[in-house]
Amino acid sequence: MTKSCAFVKQLALIFNKAYIQIKLGRSMGFGYNTANFSGTAHTMQSSEWQQLLQPINRFLGCSTPESWLEQAAKPENLPTLLRDHLICELKAAQSAMYLIRRYAIDDSSADALLQWLKPFEDFTYRQQGDWRTLADLSLRKSMIPKASNGHAQDLIDKMVLLIKEELHHFYQVLEVMAAHDIVYEKTTSSRYAKGLLRHVRTYEPAAMVDKLICGAYIEARSCERFARLAPLLPARIAEFYISLLRSEARHYQDYLTLAQQIACADISERIAYFGKVEAELISSPDADFKFHSGCPQAAASDQSAA
Image (cartoon, rainbow, N blue to C red; front, side, top):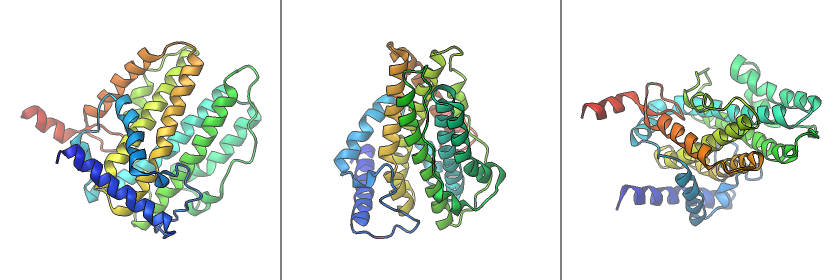
């Protein structure tokens, strides 16, 4: 059996187990509520998630390096992986919120968004508050679109849903950490997102289109890594990561759809350009192990020496 076939078979077993457990109404151990799962990926059959991953894998310029997966599978790296995953969920919500505030809504709506996000940021950056209270927070104001932007309502609809889902995932990661006795600690960001965004053009609407394409790559890579990680991690974390696949795949599609609509022109060259940048960040040596980091430095050095 080839390595890829073995991976698919192992992922299928994990996926089917998660589906059966939720179908039977069993507790997953850290607040898994089927009504709250935005992606509802656990309701998919194995053929569905294989179909879901195909466009993701075609979109990305490279697969996650095996050396990164080997590092991620080490039990001593689980705290780093989960803490950085937590930060990634918050940054995904912040990025979507920035796009709405910058391009789509009036000032009062922007203020409401900032107030919604503030407790999450207070906990993460200032270590204020009890993370358990975050579960009850929601956006209570309707967003008022800017009349000058013909794409504002579509941007609002897609990005507000994305923010809700990312903040829900943020809370779920905290539940996973608590279940594994992992205490949250501040962590530095990886080079990944900055490495993409430094290539964004500086004039509009090109800047907005590039930011949306970057968002698509970040979501697609997250989806790919959740799928690749699932067979390597403890069973309940694996089930959680499988449950995220559908929402991550939809986020990538939403970003690309918005980029195409706003550009009103062929964006294939920009997609290809950022694809090369993203693949380089993932496959090149990286001394800082994180959820979106590149090839571990030691492994890359060993390969060069060989």
